Length: 541
Image 1 (spheres, helix red, strand yellow):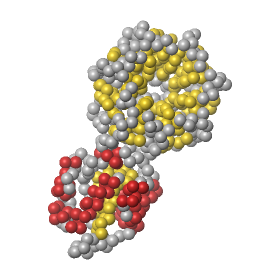
Image 2: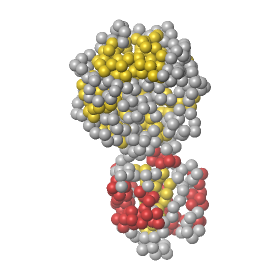
Image 3: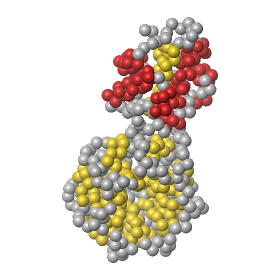
Image 4: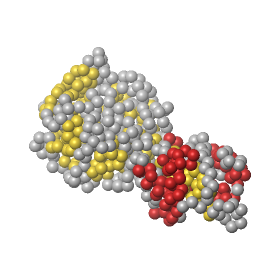
């Protein structure tokens, strides 16, 4: 059977690819529109990709419609007539099809077969023939979307073959820049503690973008996302947290179950293994988890009964709040107290607030001073009370400093301060106990970043201070040190903020989500590493 394959670089607007998720099944709507043979080719391709450890392709209706138009053109002779006998000039066909302008912006591959091959024969040829028959294209992990069409020979056609097959494979390096069409659902919370972002919308869905080396976005792939994509199909997510340095993720659902995804080299996911998870996996069977906080290599969580739990790495730090175990692959209870209200995991250390309003710390809390000497704030393998105050409302720990809110609206900070991240008006190396940030008593929300801090006041204004070398403060500039709180813009409808390593994300009361700072693998606006953002950029909806 004579077969001809052409490889092209062309594509059309593929918003469906960017939002298609990581599943391998054809949707009910797509299945109804495609022939059984087309569905079978799609199924067989994914079986082969799975055998080779690859991610399954995701069906895309736009690609399928382009495939069908392309096949029909082939049968009418228009394609070869407009491109030459070998069909290698794809630009002319793309321009005539109305997608010429997109050819440099997007990229895909077309595998073209003339003949009446069965699906099994076609896919087996691709698998066994290598590049000469497009096999490497089908199996390439550069692609994650596919459209397939088979067009029967029309009446009166002089072509001896029964049909044309076309398979469009969409390349992810370009599709990452295709903006999805979001529904107008407000965002209620966001976490951005490392190089990826997780957000929950009011409909309970989970969205993710940014770095995805180890599946930390939870969308079933390891493809970085430059726009938010939905992670799975669940619509009952309640809260999320992202790790400080190791880029892992945990979340609690409204039914009290706990889920985790991403890298798991130190057991920080808590699922009893060291396996990387590209999709959320449930941690145990308990349904009474209240909140969770991801640190650097360890995780903390509180249950609705007030008990404290920890897992991951506890080596040489006491970050769990107990001397042993050195490492735990599953959650272990810390102590017997049943009055923990909230916790925040830092880098080898931890903080928590009890229901009586007292603040507690444990682990190895050390900071690097201006002389690059490590200074120990405390080293404890069991929780120790910080001061005597009993009116603490919330606490946020990160790489080397901590910020905490009092119930009276005051804001306090301690730890490293080389970049002015404590906000106390100086660049003193560090503080060993909480120091008040200014005199204001109207702070509502605060988040510690790696070397900076962001906070929201009760009047809805947004403030930030500390390191700003990549625009993470968001005041339109970049400067190394900002030792006092700086008001960000003039808006007065900010609700919450999450400070990461060199980036920030915040939610307004109208449900819009905004990001700024370092643009390593995307801040959510479709741009890449060539464009850091020094001011808030709207991401969704």
